[in-house]
Structures are given as structure tokens and as C-alpha cells.
Image 1 (cartoon, rainbow over the protein chains, first blue to last red):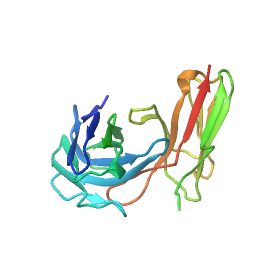
Image 2: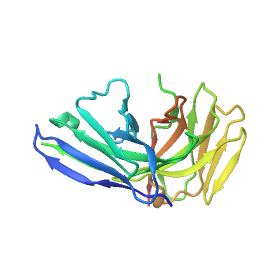
Image 3: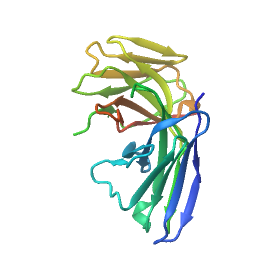
Image 4: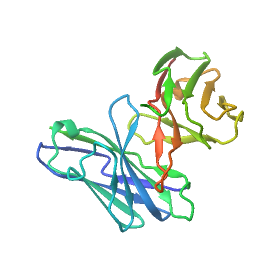
Length: 118
Length: 112
């Protein structure tokens, strides 16, 4: 089946550092990738939709200058948390949707990145 | 306003018990998905229901889509510790990006 890989799976860094998270579709091309944020014992909240070759679409309340998204190829999207602070600590999950004519292609999820800001 | 209301939010039961999780909305959907997520991992798709009244079975899990396609339920028979996890219902919302919106989830703990 379709595989989505996230890297790193876990990162700890100091406050003020910028952290980049990668999301790769390993065996398929993904025109669209999605970035979610999840707090402990809560559901996934969509942060932004990343389209290959164009600007990401951010959900209401998500700071685009804080969470930089780049989708430079059909197999890679990156999320950079700039000047991270402890309140940015969370579990970040990406998903990738197969390229295709119809937008209801299934999404495949990565295993997430746990970000801890000290 | 939450698009999908899931209940209960938390559920702790003993091994062997049965349970039902509900996912409700005031909106009508063309399809609805159920996911299970284990700690430290991404959600895994369990099933997609598309027809009103549809019932799908996955071993000890039974999924039902309401006749009006506004609600769904997940029933687990003889729960096992391996069933422990966060159960999420989700639907696709409209627009060109066709986003997946999740309910708040039901955190299930099955004690041995």
C-alpha cells in the first residue's frame, strides 16, 4: 500500500530554534499534502493544505509566517516551525493524497513527528 | 461549531466487554471514514461507509452508516487490550482541496 514517511519522528530543541519536518510519499506521487497538529488525547486539527508548486492554504488561526510550508516536488513537503517556543510543542502529522483527476482520492498518513521545545 | 460530534470522549472497559462509539452530525455526507490511532503513530483507516444504512464488518468491529447519512456508529464485540487506541470518525468537506475533517475522537482503553 501507499507509504508516507515523516522525518524526524521525534525532535527536542531549545526555544527560539527553527525546526524542519519532512513528509515524503515513498511509492506514489502526491499533488496535495496536508499538515495536522495534535495535542495529547485530542483529535487531529488541520493546519494547512500543501499543493505542489503553489502556496499552501492555511486554516483559520494558523500563522503562515510561523509555520512555513514548502511543497517543491510531488513526493516531498516540508513544514518549518520558525522560532519555536514551548507552546509549539505538539505531535505534527502529515498526510498525502494520490495525484489524480478527482480530489476524493484517499489520504495516507505518516507516523507523525513529536516536537518538544524546551 | 464542531462538524462531527463523537461520543463518548473517553471509555475504559474490561477485556471481553462490548462497546459502541457514536459519530453524529447535522450535515449529510456522501461518505464517512473511521480511523484508529495508537500512541505515537499516525491514524490508520479502518473503513469507509458510503451508502445510507450500510453495515460493514471488520472482524469484531461493526460499522454502520445512518439511513440519512448524518451519523455513524462503531461497535466492538468482546474487546481486547489490542483494541486500545483513539478512534476517529472523519468526513471530506467541500472545496477544491477536499479536506478531511476529524471528529474529536473516542479514547478507548481496554484493560486486561
